[in-house]
Length: 253
Image 1: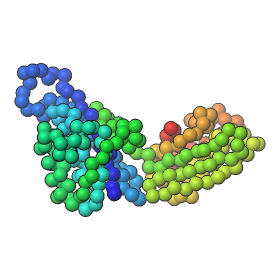
Image 2: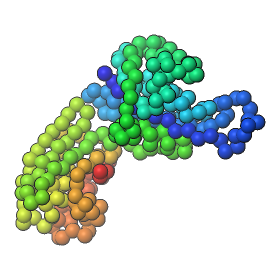
Image 3: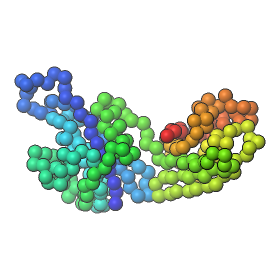
Image 4: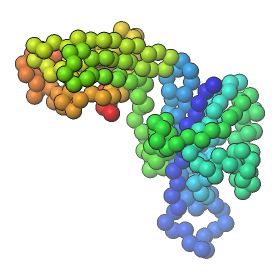
């Protein structure tokens, strides 16, 4: 089943007063964000700006966009952290009936079976949908979505590291030995080993690669390779140049 994480951001126009016109579409500026996850495909991100009378209407527009961007004829789970929107889509909030009807009408038109689910803001796709919505409201475009992540697991004092590359439809793992005589610190060795093993999984698309649990020292040397010892410096620069040529940029978490 496809999954869509949706969120919205909305702010009232500063000039709104009690004497404002009845046209609610003039009352506020919003943005919507969507992260669409399909089995075996790269996650996709979408965002847009809109005028809306309140945040809940903007949130329902995000759900509408989820149905619009999802593959026709397939099942779809829509995740939201907005209780009012969840109740509305479940038919328990009549005030938003018109907006909800648009969602269900488009789902029927595109032969999409929709299931409504709650998600916590702490979940990564929800956080990203929130960032997409905020940036869209501000007229900005959020950077490309991380399409893969490299996890580094290394115990203190251990002479080995466990590396995992995760991306949609694929997870690969390696055990690598660390050389105590190498001019690179063990944690930086683990990082470079992971980056040099990534091509074995097949080419990654240009964009960010999320690296998790890299040590602060490994991150510092990656960002400033000229601070490394001779020999280590060359290894860092060579790997950096290779990733730059492929359009891949590391993001550390």
